[in-house]
Length: 72
Length: 72
DNA sequence: TACAAAAGAGCCATATAATGCACTTTAGTA
DNA sequence: TACTAAAGTGCATTATATGGCTCTTTTGTA
Image (cartoon, rainbow over all chains, first blue to last red; front, side):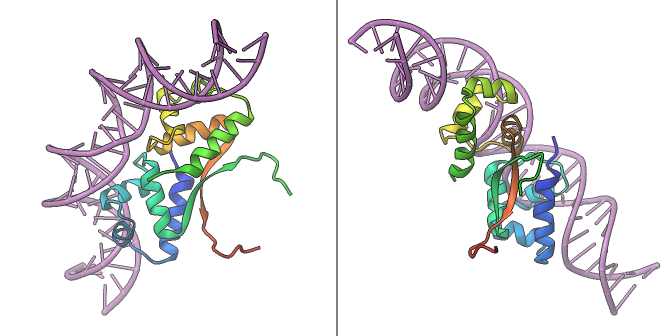
């Protein structure tokens, strides 16, 4: 199973803020190895890891209702 | 670390659809033990587990930008 | 209250996530 | 092209998530 959309969110946000993986690892408290693995699509991170990364970047991990036909 | 908001999303959605933990476990392919642990706030599920549960319930795991002052 | 279904918890084995360290690869730049 | 910072990978260890089985607790209802 891949999590491209989650990965992209983190990656885009991190790059937008011009933060290196190393800095994000420090800021978030997640191991650098773990972050590298996640961003390169290798991992299956835990909710805690995702939450920590999100917190450091101002992102919140949520469940959104899937809508086939966009509301509005 | 607790994930009350994620837990609530799953729990509410499951109950709204009147699906038992056992059925959801079957539908999602997640072990019953794992689901029970998650819903009772004990676990630290992996992205895969969360995604499987979400899929079965029509929920998508996403990162949302945290806004202190709602954009609108 | 008695019963049954659903939910929660203990125990345990297996799989794998997290992490550090060292090394390789890639990308940007003088 | 040579150099450097950032990103990606292999390996090994430790911690823990998963999931089955069984038992207990909770909840809803006749």
